[in-house]
Amino acid sequence: MRQIIGILLLILLPATSALAAEVRVAVAANFTAPTQAIASAFAEDTGHQLIASFGSTGQLYAQIKHGAPFDVFLAADNRTPARLESEGQVVAGSRFTYATGALALWSAQATLVDDSGAVLRSDKFKHLAIANPKTAPYGFAATQVMQALGLQKQLAPRLVEGQSIGQAYQFVASGNAELGFVALSQVYRDGKLAEGSAWLVPAELHDPIRQDAVILREAADNPAAQALVDYLHGERAAAIIRSFGYQLGDQL
Image 1 (tube, rainbow, N blue to C red):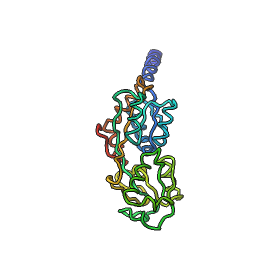
Image 2: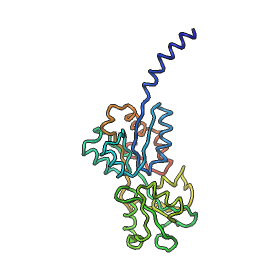
Image 3: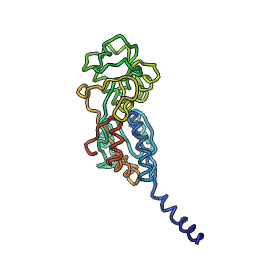
Image 4: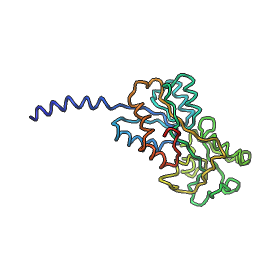
């Protein structure tokens, strides 16, 4: 009997393993923490493995265009995935908005940032971190906010640019910049600010940060890629996305 069970296990294990696959995902830096949480839940629920690479949307676009082996792209805007779509680089019909982001002015210091952003007009800081507005949608949104407030020229000498919103966050977290424009998801957990002080930037001060996802053309036959997109439409992923301060995309 033991020998029969052993033979059955040898037959069943390869079949079970064949059902699991890997999906390589290019992820905008603002979505790092949610992706890590989603990856764990996704593996638990589907058996598939999510392997993520993080960076600015512009940097990831360049890597994709140069042949980087990604299956799915989670961007920080809707323009870049639309551009890839127009260039024939994505699976037709796969593009959708998975989240809408929010921008925050944040400091690791508990009392530096007030609830109206008035600190930007003060001399209480020497350095203001933002992501590169040419490659990072959150950095571009930060420049729009400064323009809307009439502060772009005044703040220009104090700006410190990170290549991604992740690097901008690190400048502030490390104390190299007293405050910075970051993604709300980087400092927000389960309905509250994790640390420091922050001003949630009113959405009307910048263009909507609609974050789109696509399945890339080379992954058309990868079952894990489609499984991930389906998972992002599901309730468990939606709960994770909300917990980091995002609004849900239109199709969630």
